Amino acid sequence: MDNLTHTLFGLTLARTPLGRAGRGTTMALVLASNAPDLDFVGVAGGAVKYLQWHRGPTHGALGVVGLGLATAALVWAGLRTRNRDAPDSHTSFGRLWLVAMTGVLCHVLMDLPTSYGTRLLSPFDWHWFAEDWLPILDIYLLAILAAGLWFGRTVVPARKAAETHSVWPGRERSAAIALVFVAMNYGLRATAHHEALVQAPRLFGPLLPKPCPDAVQPGALLDRWPLDGKTTPHDPSATRCLVEVAAIPSFLSPFRWQVIARLSDAYELHDVDVLDGRFGDPGEQSEGFWRLSRRYPNLWTPAVVQASTSRVAQAFLGFSRFPAARSFVDREGRATVRWTDIRFTMGGFAGQGQGVQGARQGNLFTVTVRMGADGRIEREGFGQ
Image 1 (tube, one colour):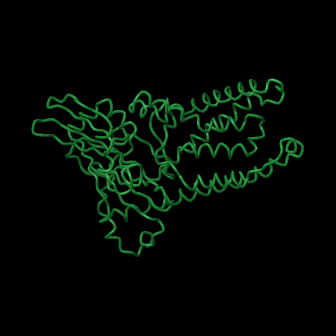
Image 2 (image 1 turned 120 degrees about the horizontal axis):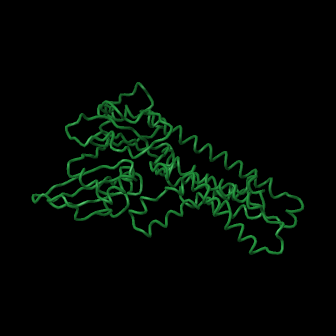
Image 3 (image 1 turned 90 degrees about the vertical axis):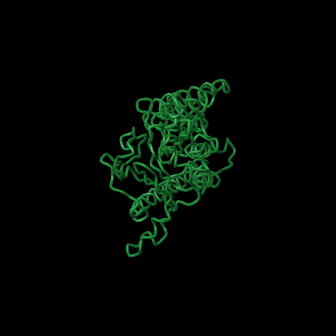
């Protein structure tokens, strides 16, 4: 999720009984709710380093414990530096640590249901995991959290609040209501996501071949990638088969999804609105639905296989969930290979309707490798 959402969620948590832990808990929750994104400093090492470390150890078990400890230490030291005359009023370090770890854990759990995903088990396992329920920026989640904080605001003099304790019940009630609506938002999106996947056979019709022998099983608790090449044959003569089907959320509507069918040699994309009665009515003729699909090749030629060993390609393929490969060899034998992450070609960062062509501008979601006639890599980088 974006950092504004994480910040608002941290403030909401501070208005639950967690906020009763004592002075400094609000600051600890806000800092901890954003702490895992400190991996952004990887940008200083270049785009490759950023992709290698993004949502890595800071989003794993060690990150929850370590970042919670660092946040608690920072807040605890700040309290004692600022309020030296009243040390008895300070929250204990142990409480701050538990509160901060809660904030970090909630950050990770909020990243997991997004289509971007997170490396939940790093540094022990560098695979990505996701639920695909929410986009990276969910305007409805933002609105719920902001409304909860707005309606729960209470302006009470500090002395009166300390005497009557009247500030907490109102804020806790508003926070509880907001969290209920947050859960409803997640539940709605999870239900719509399931329905979008159910409609996949009708959307693609005859375009869907039989599943590959080691295809990703539908209905898995978590989506996991990269697939380590097990279901992407490098032999062009291999039998065409279905690798997996996924549904990616849209930005504006929780009912509109982009369904992606990953085949062994291409991707088929189709937009669906789960409220559209044509897709839910078994009696509706579905022969025409598949004609609206968009197809993007993913041909692993010998040039693509060789280019995939480059440093930039390895970083990108370790990050990308749906890398679509294209290659071109000129008369002199020089090869140009390009990968684009299909997730970000439609309705994502590349912009609605731009397709692979629109995603080729300089960004982290397209990689180009150029090789000489002798097979040596001459140039590699992001974008064109």
